[in-house]
Length: 342
Image 1 (cartoon, helix red, strand yellow):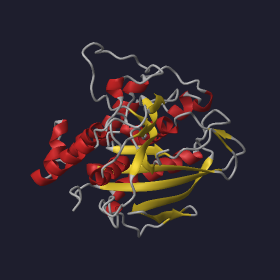
Image 2 (cartoon, rainbow, N blue to C red):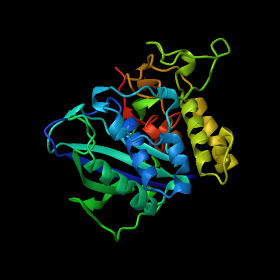
Image 3 (spheres, rainbow, N blue to C red):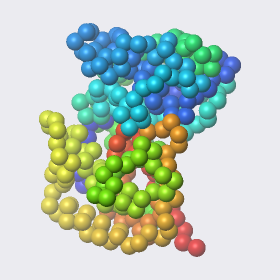
């Protein structure tokens, strides 16, 4: 039986539809989502509750102070030190275009994790902020803000998406629980195909093995990924276990404490499966630096000689939760695919 059934998570799939003639999207929309929605949420909260939000995002309204579509933002923190919400959240924008016309949809997923997996929080804080962002235009005529309708919001129940907002109308009777996301998911237990390809959908930054010779890395990576930053399956599993500490009681857990959720027998089976996967990769990873304007360090594909079936449930969970640094902005998720040897 898959051991991480205690994970609290609510997944919302959000569909915004453009209602103006032309909208230009920044290279990494999740950065804009975080700042604009974070600021609007902070304005709506009581003073004591809003303190952490305002400390992160300040008092200046980003809809008035910058033109994100044209890239004329005032100087701010570096991509490696961006403010995030004081809630454990993921803003995962589905791959799309840079320019949208009237009627075209923008899809993104909001994930509330751990103590933040609260449907009431979404209804009281986040949805009203989205509604305000949809009707409050930024100065630029090409900005997304104030130029879209909230067409739909869906909530995940396993692999199905159930409507919460449809045609702009909210179903107030719908109750989303922090456990329904896993209903019906088998986590690869019935998978009989052999996966070899791991495709990073968003940039990742695992920083698994820093070397003593280079304690300080450049702000942006070079064009070739260093050997110590190429993630192995064990590195990905270790990053997942570090992520799992989010669901432990209390705060400030060591990364290795996530292994404590597994009984000794399961830990032994995983170690054996990882040993099986240590064959040299079939080819050098096709990993390149993250696109300009994105957090994270690397993106691309990795081809493994084999991905043991024992690891599939853990890899699927890692792809849902996101792993590594800057997961708030959607970094650190991937998909598995088949690979046919020539």
